[in-house]
Length: 112
Image (cartoon, rainbow, N blue to C red; front, side, top):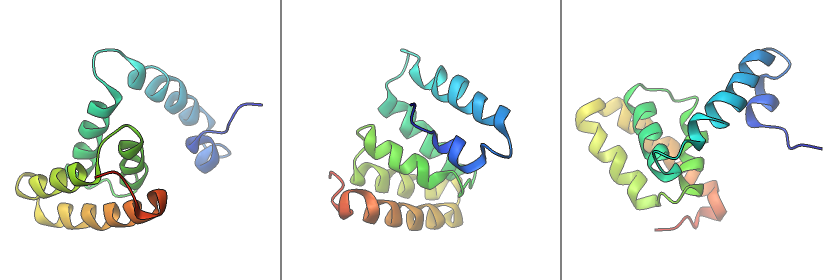
């Protein structure tokens, strides 16, 4: 029995082809390419989501960034830095999402 992906749980009954592309192409191929580490991919992804104000996807990728070795301090610094490039409202929304994700990640004891 295989573990159900996040995409499968949330949209599998509604958009099975999108789940397939998400699982097989995005996470099965793109995220696994050797040209960048998963840590670097997470930093790039979180920065892009903050800059584009993609608040629905941000919590998932903040958690994934922590799992990929990005620290709490690095995420906070990334968001602070982006406030000046991506806009203050984007950064404020992102920091609120990060605060919640970090509080829930390992009981709020994410690595520093």
